[in-house]
Image (tube, rainbow, N blue to C red):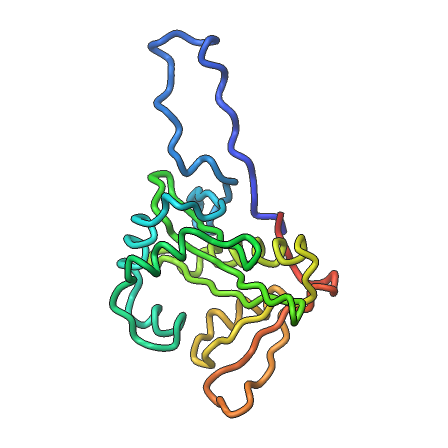
Length: 203
């Protein structure tokens, strides 16, 4: 299933009177529109250097449990240095995408970290708590799969705590295999074989 849809372009300004002219489109509309399972429209686009403040606000909305499941430990805030790194991705080393709402607020984020020696990439994913279970994570992960394939990588993988059932179910739904991590009973490795055409990808 392809969740991405370009928003309809409005008629040219010179085709309508000043009274009919719409307000400027939100910055979020710069990306590709998709609908959540409950009918909301979000936009998917690459992260930008000017996203620092939006990333900070998005992090502040996460629950402590979400943060622990993402980074495997407690974290109260992102440092200015970390925010700069998150908003300024080296294209040779990875890629990052955000799902934004009509106000430009970041409601989900997905990243890959490329390891050319392994011909693969590690992924990380997190979604605003108000939008979990509504297809945002799926849209982001599909885009990460598509981006990894575009780069000619052979696999995409991530480490997931065994208690993170939602992430494990999403990965399985899109075709990931589940592998044990030696010495870490509370963690599994989910792996997408990008050479397998059955692996779901968007875009």
